[in-house]
Length: 407
Image 1 (cartoon, rainbow, N blue to C red):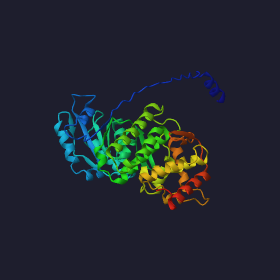
Image 2 (cartoon, one colour):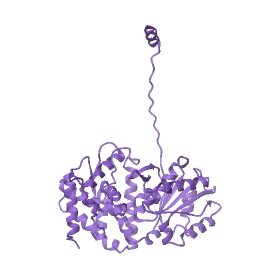
Image 3 (cartoon, rainbow, N blue to C red):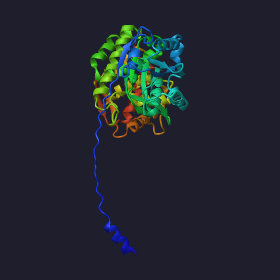
Image 4 (cartoon, rainbow, N blue to C red):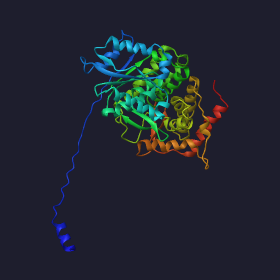
């Protein structure tokens, strides 16, 4: 019997292996509009943006609206409905705007993602329809996630209403929600159909939200544009008084730098091991979670940048004194550069926040790649960090918080 089996095996033909390499090039092109009062019937940018690919068709759309935005602008819902009614031959608003929580709560609780998907399904939106998200970055993330996975992708237009969303997250290509106590664990890379930055929304923001959004401008200036960083220093008084011209310039230049990295940086969907725009973020993401999201993202990033700036000095990358220069600017803008979560340590004395390094690496996989500072305006990628120097940097922040030396 064994000989028979052996002979049969020998008689089988040799399997031929063919390997094909499929190459697909996809060009993404979407407008990023900077305007004011987008739902004024005299402003046709919203209409023209949505109908640009099928100018003669009627476009179905659903609007998901941040409850904080709706509360601060009581006329907004009626303006949206009036606008769509004015152009009802081209825009079919299939239901009243759907109000959702703002902030990380919309990303932490899965029922909100489900609600968005159910609304899309109930109104039979298809891939030529539009999901419009009006709100802060968290709402844009959640609505973008739902749009990206419904019918494998429904057109998603973002209308960011915070400084942080207008100058950073809103012009990017990522969507996501939080899961397993990890920030943005579930998500997609799905470029939006359009981004519309309406400066009018910024005027309705609380001061804390305006300030928090400036952190990303500091970040991108530190790693990409020393001239912009000097402009931020020179215009700090205008920024802390929320001067209209200064705020608009800061938002637009910050957005431009983010857009440039995404379009020309060579890795828009983060297939490698690096997130080159995420200076100060490894600790920021962990601090957000450790604070129970009481820290705004921008507030956590400001702390993370201060931490990494001092660490860069300790390692000899960054010149002495530049960390204090960065600290002074952030402090002058109104950031509190300390949170008690920084003082939490494991039994071996290693700060709890250090776990953020592992989380950061796990999110992308591959080699650990973090951005530090080589000079103002120039980031440098590193592949390891010393836990003792991190602890020393935390202590540096603690001392400055307890005994402030800057005015």
